[in-house]
Image 1 (cartoon, rainbow, N blue to C red):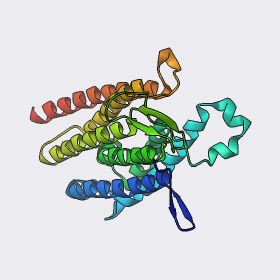
Image 2 (image 1 turned 90 degrees about the vertical axis):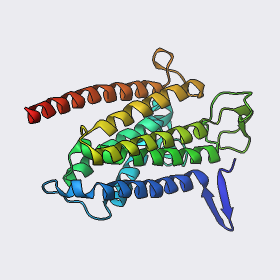
Image 3 (image 1 turned 120 degrees about the vertical axis):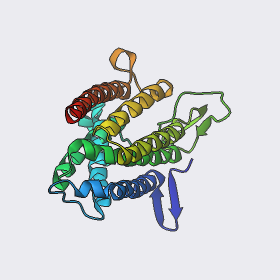
Image 4 (image 1 turned 120 degrees about the horizontal axis):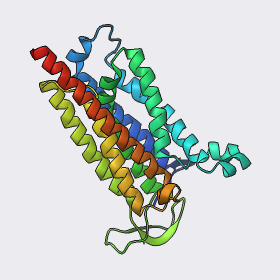
Length: 269
């Protein structure tokens, strides 16, 4: 793989390059979602959005999410972190998906309030862009060979990473590539759901609930062929976090659908 690009005197980490690309592309996706929902958003009392709010949201949430991903990763091994914290904090490698999700989620709660958009509706808007950003970021993991690959495999598409940041000469599952395609598929599903919202009434938060469920299921299953250490009941930390994501998404979906049906019956009575 190609952990670094050497352009004359410049050395560019491919992981960082792909993270920057992920933020840029997801900002365009988010802006497109804001633009197609503009009539509905402008009907919200006090709506404080502007024509470029998608780029603002991704800029802030992306940076906070990366910080959360870094902190979560280093705190997964607290003894190693506290023994020598600074090099680990400022390393270019090691980012945890769930930490990024938590950091980005907290930032989005703040931004929803700032833009005066109901939280669940705001999360619906952000969900497809979040999937796209994650998918592209995983290509950075693939290029750098940072250890996010899977177990050894004899499948024809197995890859080796002899020059990776975490090298291996064995042919292994290219799990970042699997995640790239899966998360793009989830993004397409959520985008189509958003289009349906523009045509017919839907419960606010339905897209976000499905995001939590689908990404949780995908990550839980991928972890079975990843090389991450096991902790709770033989599961990796990411699998535990995925189960929490699935449960929260399912509970939220049932609740908002129930509330939506009740309101609909009241309005029809």
